[in-house]
Image (cartoon, rainbow, N blue to C red):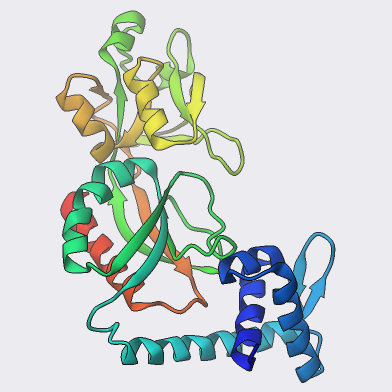
Length: 300
């Protein structure tokens, strides 16, 4: 193993927070990665990492060294990209994770055009609404609704999703049509809860009409942490739901959902694309980001 391998192993361990995850991203054994980091520490005569049975923490010296080394490795990758002609024809594997409705309704229908433009880029798409460990799972970027609060990620604002309230005709026939949002907190009405996977709590809804502003929780009998399942529960008549219009409009056109509280305004949901701040931004990721921003302007 050469010096480059030891530096790369160290950087991946810091980013992943464990030797096991780093080994997976490098396609090496955990033992090999550990030996490489040990060789680097021996050469530098400095302790870079604190190892315990549960976690790996970077030392102050290791953190400073990581900042310099990650920049150097990024510069090397840039040089390789230029010589390989990637600036003219981006190529390689791009691992992303996106919400399921956004994948189904926005990304997948548009991917043929992206593939025609960049035929040498291979996309591995995770489809979920869960909190993804972008660095630990070696994901290039994620697309998420709501604020991105992870400090190690760069978040690019892609769009503001306009929200609306909806219910299935069968639900309205059985429960009656609510005239005021507050009615959703009392019998017989109920909502479909959107479950935050990280905390297990139900997302609250902020809604305004003139000077009247409300923050609602609502009563629910079913909650889901996946956008497609959440929408399916609403269409099935399990309660009133709050959803981005791009998700609800196909069901409204089919008569499967009815808009509610149309004189009220819901705070838009920001849509972000996020990626590790210290990771080299490859040409394939740069063109994908630009394409998503263009797609969002046209579709949302």
